[in-house]
Image (cartoon, rainbow, N blue to C red; front, side, top):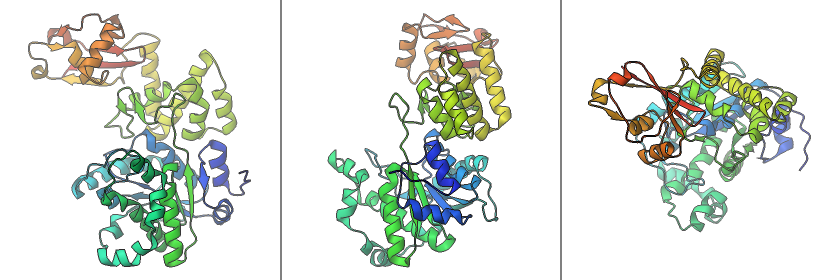
Length: 416
C-alpha cells in the first residue's frame, strides 16, 4: 500500500527502509503526532552481548527518541527462561537466573551508546519483564489470560508452522512464549502507557497477539510495526562474519574488527546499510551507494566510520581507520589489530602455525586453517605461508608476528 505519513518517525522508517508492515498506519501516525509516545522492543538475554543482527532494532529505538518519542528497551529476564521458538530449528538452551542477570548487565552497555536514559518525557526506559512474569500465578494466568488465545490461530503463525512443517518438536514451554510476549505488551501499556511494539517481521504474530490481548482485557488501543528480516545481497543472514558472530560489546569483538566488518560490506549493500545503520541524510546515502569502482571503497570507509562511531565513539572509529590504512596501504602492523598474547607455557617447545591461525580467530578450525594455507590464502609477516606443519618457538616470538587470512583479515601474535 502507499501511505503518506504525517509523523516524522513513520516518515523516517519508510524513507530509510526500516518498515516492513504496520497494524494501523493512520492510528499510529496520529498517536505519534502528540509527541512523547512510548514504544518498545524486547530483547532476550541469551548472551552477554547483542550482535549486529539486533542493530536494526536498536536504530529504530534511536530514531524513535530522535523524533521526540520515548523508547523502552524491554529486557527478557522472564521470557529468556522460556526461549523464543520463532524461526528456530531447535529449542534454545535454558539459562538460570544468575546467567540471565549477567547477560543483561552486558547488554545494557550497548544501549547506553545509542539511547539517552533518564526520567524526562523522551528519555529511554529499561524494564525487565521478570518484574511481572516472575510473580504470575499459573492458575490465575490460565483463567484470566489463557482463555483469550486460540490454539487454531497460534498454529497458523508462520514461526510455528515452519517448525511443524519440518516435523521438528515444539515444546509446550516454547509454545507459551507467544502468550508471555503478548502479556508483556499488555503490562507495558497498563504500567507505562506504552502503545507501540516494534520488532523484526518474524515477530508479527507475537505482536498481533499482544494487540488483541490488550484490547480484550483492558480495552487498550495499541499498535505494531515490523522491520524487514535483513539479509546481505548474497543471501546471508545479517550478523555473521567469516570468524563468527559480530558482537556489539568491545570485550567480545574489538572496535577494529567491528569497523572491518562494515568496511568489507558488499558493493550492492552500501547504500541500504548507510540508510539503516547511520544517520547520514538519505540523499547522501543514495549518492554514496551509487558509486562504482574504487570510489565505492571510500563509501565503505564512510559507512564503517559512521557505524563504529555510533557504537564505540569517533576516536575508536578514527583509530580503526588509521590501523586499516597502515595495514593495507603500507603493509605495516598497525596499533589496533586484534592481538593474541601467549605465555611461555602456551608456546612450550613450539606451537603450530595452524593452532595460531585458530587461536587468533583467523580460522574457525584446524581443518579450515590447513585449507587456507594450501590455497595460498595465509601469510606470516606479509610473506606467503606454505608449510602447514610450521612450528613457532619462543625465539620466533621475540617480536610480534603478523598473521593474515586473505587480504583483509589480520592479527598479531606476541609473547605476554
